[in-house]
Image 1 (cartoon, rainbow, N blue to C red):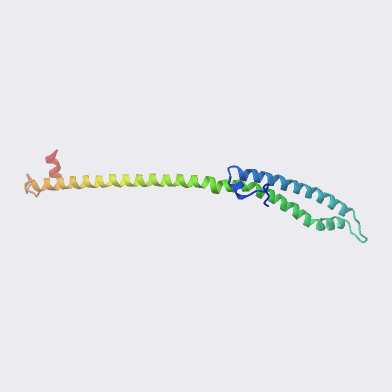
Image 2 (image 1 turned 45 degrees about the horizontal axis):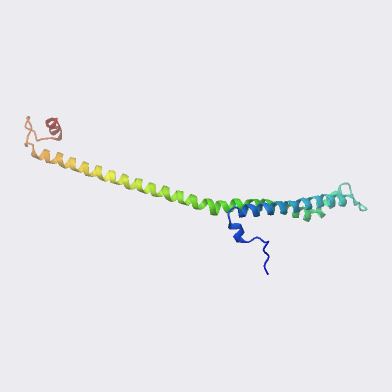
Length: 165
């Protein structure tokens, strides 16, 4: 028989599922951390009150601190777990909700850039054809001119421009 009150991955992948789960776990872990913190303070205070023969000043306090370090690490780890549970929904949204949107936007931008480049290439090709036609027209016009100008020199390009103006 399965427990119907437990979380499954289907629950987490449902819209808002990770946010609800993270909030529940954060609250549960925060309560545990608060309980451990209260116990740590009480335990450390009781241990500081214990005086042993031959203690130097402050030695009881250091001994209590060292003896309670594992409990303090437990409390610190629970606080870290609270923060990790808080990042659960953020990471899910970044990797499964926002990433497809970013990829689609990037693909649309790339397609737009590709069409711009194709259009620019078409314009450049048309300009090249126009330039070639103009040069062909100029060269054929030069070849139709007489072999010498008024001064008896061979024709030059500037002579053609003067005559066509």
